[in-house]
Amino acid sequence: MTRFSVWAPEASRLRVRIGGIDHSMALDAGGWWRTHVECAAHGTDYMYLLDDSDEPLPDPRSRWQPYGVHGPSRTYDHAAFPWTDDQWTGRDLSGGVIYSVRVGAFTPDGTFDAAIARLDHLAELGVSAVELHPVNVERGSTHHSACWYTPHPSYGGPDGLKRFVDACHERGIAVVLDLAYDHLQPGAGAHRIGPYLAEVANTWGHTLALDGPHGAGMRSFITDNVLMWLRDYHADGVRLDAAHTLIDRDAMLLLDELSTAVSALSISLGRPLALIAGSGLAGARFIPGPGADLAELLAPSTGGAAGIPALDRDYRAEFGSLEQLFGILRAGFSTVLTTDRPTAALSPGLLRIGATLLLTAPSTPVLQMGEEWAARVPFVPDGVPTLGALDWSELDKAEHRDMLDLHRRLIMLRGSHPDLAAPVLRRSEVWHGGSFLAIRRGSCVVVANLGRTTQRINLRGTARSVLAATEPGLVLVHDAADLPGESAAVIACCRFDR
Image 1 (cartoon, rainbow, N blue to C red):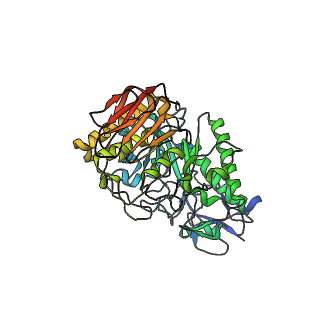
Image 2 (cartoon, rainbow, N blue to C red):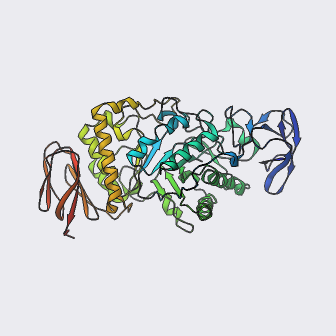
């Protein structure tokens, strides 16, 4: 016998259709309709019929949608997958290096299995975790969120994602899943089965009814989903996209509930689990344990986004001045997404400076896929129907191999020097001039010369050795460095001025 259940607190009647036969369902506590049917627990197609309508609707909590968001749901037994990661104990992601992947554009095939073939590249790069953009939507349709409980069939479905996670763990790489709860696509039918949508609209559609008369059921829809990815797909963390859209009276309870539930699951599984809040107002941050001030976590600073003037309008704003970069490095930074890669606008020297600042900054850096070799395939903004796949043949060219080598060296340096890996925001000493920037990271000083000619940069301490440099010709002069134009360096120092 297989149990079928669906949350529909306002329905007058519910049936489940299996093999052309309709089975009546009974209303249970909390607005749940349930029944047991003699059928396979894995691989049986089914649809729900609401009230007296004969229009079949997919399961809002479907584990498997082999024919897309409008087709029949299919039963799926999570216990049937042959996992091989029994020895995986998880990773603490704070301070590591995260690599962001859009499965549909990571390889020409755009599938989980094709992505597995490129994992050795990521392992050699030295990243701590892979962050997957929402896998429950079709490629190029990031803001058409539907079928939250199943990976899209175009990527390889549930088994495909599990193979990918298993392969990542085999290589010591954690997996973080982006989850978009900022809206729910009406066309998939979930809003007809239950009161999922509120009347309030946001950028991408209607927000969720988190604080209405059925708010508890809606919050469990999200909480259960988060726990499913962590438990059944062995994910090591989740990132809540646009989490600031979830703050609405009782909706704050949702983040409290998630924090408590994820902490409890982490204890139960015996491995660390990360819960990250992605906010259009303040970038992305790890959500601390239960009882933390989540309102402060997601609320915008009085000085603009992360306290940085001119960055309070949009998280995709360009960092156009050294003053803004100075503020970012002192207070934390937001993600920058443009319609093109920096490769198209910056010189090779400035690209190397950017890599050095990103991989030594007081944060948990996120590399966009292909960024490590200065890929030239453009970034495509969310909502655009097609994404150009990475051109992996670029790695055959010297300029791209050199950039990849720099990223590898910087990530290795970060891993071997705790001062460089500590993700401590708002505590780093930062100073700058008209075209240079310096950041003290414990016993190290990171210096960047954005000008085209050599500059002498005060280290505010006694130089001991050069740990990394993007260009030859660096000269140490006691408490300063003569740094060539458009270059950066990491310098070990001692006896700081203060």
